[in-house]
Image (cartoon, rainbow, N blue to C red):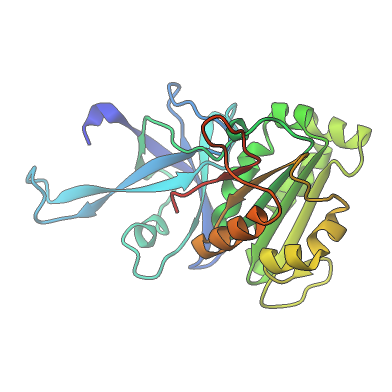
Amino acid sequence: MTAEKYTVETVTWVKTWVPHKLFSFRTTRSPGFRFVPGQFARLGIERPDPAAEDGSGRRIVWRAYSIVSAPYDDFLEFFSIVVPEGEFTSALEHLREGDKIYVDKTNFGFLTTAAFPAGKDLWMLASGTGLAPFVSVLQDLEVWETYDHLIVVHSVRTAEELVYRDTIEGLRDHEVFGEFCREQPGKLIYLPSITREKVEGAMNGRITTLIASGELERRAGVTLDPARSRVMLCGNPEMVSDLRKLLAERGFGTSRRGKPGNLAVENYW
């Protein structure tokens, strides 16, 4: 990739959620970089490579990362899991303030609310780091103005992995989004689910199991109705695949030529 296709940004903030497992970081943002909530960016870091064609002894390794921050923020924020022996994340884990990182100038992805006609209820179903794009979506004023209910379901293995919980729940007190919550209590619904331990206040089990049993809808107080619900999926590939099959049985599908859908899925993972 030529230098004209990316910018060199600086890491400005690093937050470790779970040591050697989950972390977030922010970078500077080029004024020319634009994106829609739910999209992802391609990030690059330099790695040693004696066989590099340019003789530099290094090469840039690229990976896709959903953007956590809002389109109006002057920084870019990302959420990552450390993959054992992973060439990219094992290096990314050691990022510090002041380090350089490459950002492709192009935005990517179709996990946006533009993927389907507006409905009444927006369901955002995530596992693990798949929560990242939904944190950005929740900072989109148009989403708050369009939907009656914003339902975020975050499935993780253990309670310590429930990152961004304070950020999401804090939107109820946000100077702008909080007004919607005060006018309509219950507009923002946050439902954490933990699969490997039972924790008070959280559901227990995989999202597929919770939908099949009806517990998810009971907890939300909202029905998964294909006529009024719009669903966004992001996370573990197996989870996404299983949910697509389950939701298809209930009348949910992605948009096709000439046929608007009610389901949006990101396949870059």
